[in-house]
Image (cartoon, rainbow, N blue to C red):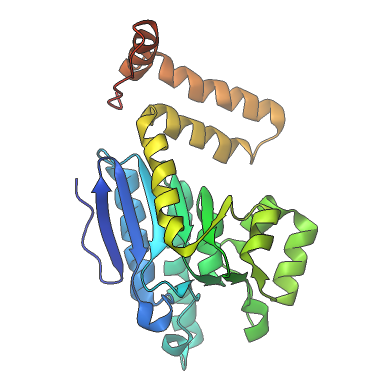
Length: 265
């Protein structure tokens, strides 16, 4: 099923099984407004409900200078407390639904990522970035705090002490530091970040899609459990794959010395 049309996102399927989602408000550094929150929630919800033949998603942005500058503070100027909380709930649901998406999401961070923009990177499964770009969670410098998962996702990636320094100072850091700390998996030249993400997406899309989703599910939820419970959960995820056509195809193709053709069944 094709994804629904949106106002603030560009949607593209450059090749089979791969979906590109681009933040598309370059005139304001791709800052979040209320509509972008709604649009992201719509897209992630659609991918959860009816993924169709999509096996990997790349999240990137138009413009090039900024991946995402965070919340649109011009839209927020003069908001009542009630309106602010209502808007933020829309953002919360967009981020939580992204985390729940069973399809792998690679962030191709082709510009600066601040505040909610960095939280999008943290909510992805992994990320490639561009040399010369900067990252920050700046919320405490304007009287709020990270509220789209940053206080939870960042410590899980970089550790508690590093996360406290990043969040409590609000200071920017470089793509190279983001790579060293585990926020980015790779740093590329500007013209190489999307091709690198596409290359990885092709590899993921070529693997058994049900296996990919179950492995992601096992890691995502297992990390929230004690080890013994997580090991049992892993086996439950594993056992759901034993009766699939893709498992039979994988073994058959190995023995026939050919490339497997996975159908997600």
